Amino acid sequence: MAVVEGYYSQSVPKTVNFNPYSDNGGSVVAVAGEDYAIIAADTRLSAGFSIYTREQSKLFRLSNTTVLGCTGCWCDTLTLTRILEARLQMYLHEHQKPMATPAVAQMLSTMLYYKRFFPYYVSNILAGLDADGRGCVFSYDPIGHCERSNYRAGGSAGALLQPLLDNQIGYKNMENVPKEPVPAEKALAIIKDGFISAAERDIYTGDSILINVITKDGVSVDKFKLRQD
Image (cartoon, rainbow, N blue to C red):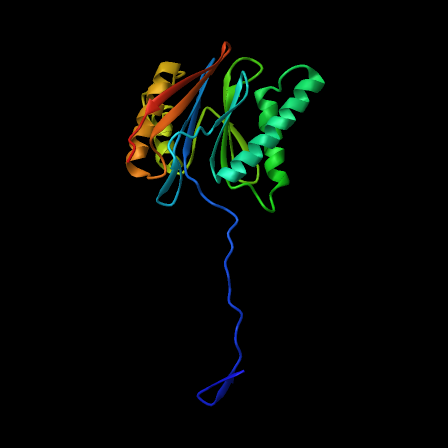
């Protein structure tokens, strides 16, 4: 007990905050077409105003037709992708064929929901080809809700990139515009333009972007430089 101005006061335990999550930034964009899917993510891994590395890939090739893009807490990203890859290997050995993209999307949704009380702090976008050879994109919330679409943006600059995709890919609120399938060349140019703009506004997105183009012939990789300040 300590006496303060004639009153007794009892010492109070100090509160120490603990946060198990860390946001390491990064952005990911995916676009699906009639016979292709493109997914791209920047290579900057940072925390606050510190850049850990400028050459970290956030794209994980799960098969010749499926690629996963992850941004957010890097330790959660590594844990999630290692478990996912292990399950895919088990499926491959048991069934003698790789798991199809929609099946991978459902399995990932189940894995995220299993951790709903202590979720992975990761923004996931899955891109690939379905059983008919058509491009598909699956996006998730932290506890596993899955939605299939033709384009999606996520990560730290997701709010900046998604409106561009809505306008240029989805033709939202545009009149007298033929809503034709977007060719791969145009989708690739839109993705590059979007990342260039996002790097000007978001300090957690930059350095360069890695691009995976998924077709029936496999996955091709491209790299595009962004600003590095």
